[in-house]
Every structure is written in C-alpha cells, then in structure tokens.
Length: 88
Image (cartoon, rainbow, N blue to C red):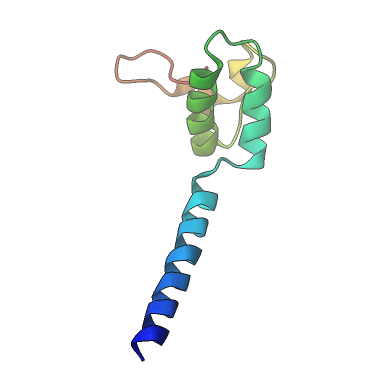
C-alpha cells in the first residue's frame, strides 16, 4: 500500500513540475514579437525579459525594433517604479 502511495505521489510531482515549467514559459506570440522588437537591442536578454512581461500583460507589442508605441497604448503607458517607460 505504501508503494502505491509513493508511486502516485511521485507521478503527481512529475506532472505538476512539467505543468509549472510550461506555464512559466512565454507564449509563442510574445516570444516571436519580442524577438523582433529586441533584435537590435544592446542588452538583448534584458530587453527580452521586460518585453515579455509587458507583452503578457498587454497582449501586444509595437512593430519594429524601436518606436511605434502608439500601436499599443497599454505597452506604451506601463511605467517602472521610477516613472520611466518599463517596456522596450
């Protein structure tokens, strides 16, 4: 009986960890849009991080590598704690 319980516990842990990793990964939409947006960024990993955060919240990313923020008002209006634009 203990063996069956341990096996069920192990299987549930494995399944829950794989679900957690999948949910933490960015969506394909945001990954592709932010890849384009950050393609010319000097600090690409930071650009991708903040673009991904903004994209997940706003569900849009302005076109191109810079500017065009009017295409996505939510993305444009997000600010960091210092009042500066949060999204690249």
